[in-house]
Length: 293
Length: 309
Image (cartoon, rainbow over all chains, first blue to last red; front, side):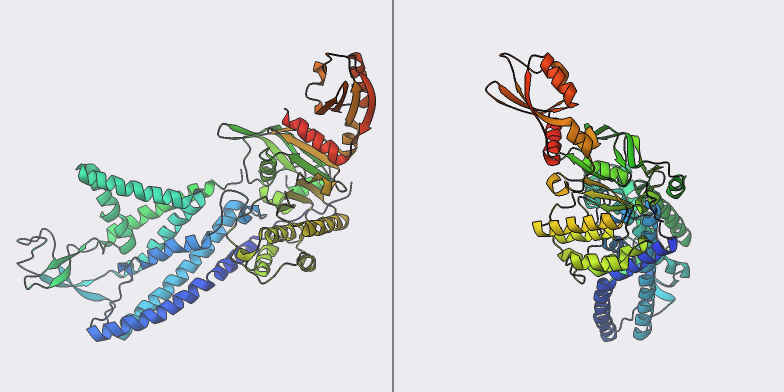
């Protein structure tokens, strides 16, 4: 019998480098498009801000843009591949779970880079348009403020200077990372992830409609808590700054955005922790479907 | 024990061996007690009808599919518990491959894959890419099925693995390219000591290379033998029979093919020639002629026999 030279597996450094390079290579087209959109968008935003006289405020936590990026990146990285079958990634001589982790981590680094650039861009916009970095004047109209109804604040209007805790600046990173993990879990865990996602959304919409029509209080409360509760998705994604804002008319007829309460950093921390644990659990389950033994 | 350690002992005689492989998809049994044995440095052709489980076996060898029961060894090492090391020994051409790197050009793809195989032979890669006339700077999304198949073959061959698993590698290739692939494969096997397990029903193209054959029928490995044994065991018998004669029960499962013309009947039977003749004579039939079959005819006879099971 002839001696056959048996082959070695690649080093972890090689695998990591390959995944980092591949994710960087796949980002070329989106980055080019994003650069073009950023240049056009910046011109429009700055000229509009100067014309209207409303500067851009530095509040990176008050937008779902980072979460959107966290959702889109996994779709981009894993597009075109069937994760259950003879996918190239699973046929290479490396432990599958470790390989998937390398790819997910390489993608997450890109997500972080994009968010850092987003921060810089937002800071530049704020600086150029003369906006505030720290404090901001808001109209504070809590529900239970004496004599004020939600839709007709005819009495006292309190305008306060609200300083968002700087810890909220972490929100874009935590929110987008959680969404990134959850979206990756869907893509790795299901044979037909888009079908499952669509099904899940349809079920939520249906149950929400049914609970409203049939006055099922506990279900309505559950949905309200999941989406806009103190430790709900809104707290995770925008530090709770979205759900507390509402549109109303002042006694002079002006339509304004008022805050019914101030976001709570403790609740944000709680929400972030809980949702990261949920997303990580989903991701771990999804990965376990690709285990070798 | 790792594959390298196992290899050092050189106790294995089979490059691939499975024990009692079983796989069900919901209520359908795809594989049942499959014990495949691919001898070291042999060329093993696995035949079977569509859906007979050929692709599933190869996926199990790559640990892409989990067996409900049974185990697989690659060079004497369990492919489930040392999967990465096992895959390092394998050049795999899947039947269908859909991956998320289709946006790459051919050049980028090869550059991406190459570091995963420390034994990647860059010069050989260039030679094969030239021989297969691949457009190196074309995106894989623009590749035809045949071009994808050629790229898969390059990826499988270029690191000169000790084991090649080729799942219908000629599918989607035009006849000219098919001949070229066969020529290059022959050359590769001459240069590199390799065990090949190939699923294909295009046996005439592999006739000159095949050493062993396995036949899958309804999820079972109904036959597995060397080329020589196939030549000895599968033969065509022309017999004359008395009226109302019927083949004895003892031939059940051994009839690969049957045709009749008047009282003369032709059977392709599986078994030792002398034994078959004895048994036929005892049943009252007289054997007029015995003809060996070509490798291709014998293989197809086995395949047809498998259908009856």
